[in-house]
Image 1 (cartoon, rainbow, N blue to C red):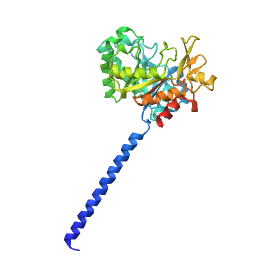
Image 2 (image 1 turned 180 degrees about the vertical axis):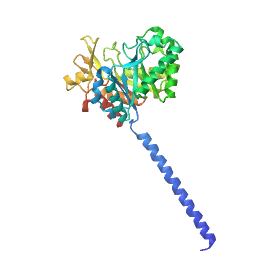
Image 3 (image 1 turned 60 degrees about the vertical axis):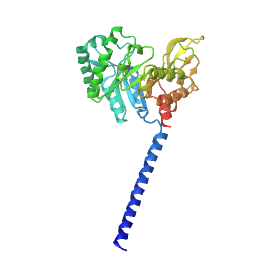
Image 4 (image 1 turned 120 degrees about the horizontal axis):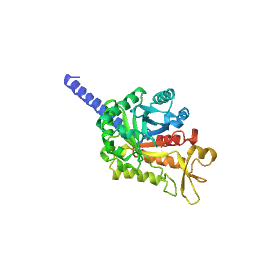
Length: 331
């Protein structure tokens, strides 16, 4: 074979080789695209609040069903020193267990009735900087992954005057220290917080429950839709930041369909009525059962995820609401 023919053959073989590589690369890209389109929602946020009064339930919680856990609550004394009522030894165990399962742990500040001292500690820029330094010091001491602000509408009105300044300084410190900053809001008190402030948070848990004026249920699927729509369309919040809050509790209603205000947990309902796990009504109790919670999980997956209040109000095993959320998002 002549040298000229050999060169032509080598060139031809090289072109075939390059074409084969390009074809394989194209097929690989198609497969990756198809997988991303058909993948489950397994990377969706599932945020669980662990209240201090239920903290011992962490032994029963399947951390594999969570992406984040919020320790509720951590609050300051008059000097700004942060404290949690969970014993130190147990708190550290919870955080270690969460990290072992690659679950991020946030310290939730505020809570119902936990607002004492916040107004004084955030009264001006100097006070804010000193307070935020103490918050970050506490977060790093216990190896938290971030901070959740769960400060609701019944705090002193003047507190909100400096709220944005506080969040701005805290968000800077969180970014500097590679920490998450989230918050919990509800449509009935969000008027205190403007869009600029809300945009500073990494994600926002929408408390789509406690609509006790409804004669049907305090947390219907339709109410969840309306709450998310409000923050997305009227408050112009990126839907990827909005995490749908789902209750693991309900209320008792009287014969006229009026909410009595008496709380009943899903665990209590399911324990005393074995046929109630999939329903939303059991006797005088109105709550969210497995069917509604699973449906809400898919709704949350179209946004920024699902948040639950609260761990400790759930069953374990196959009738667990948390398990139902996780299983739904893995399908």
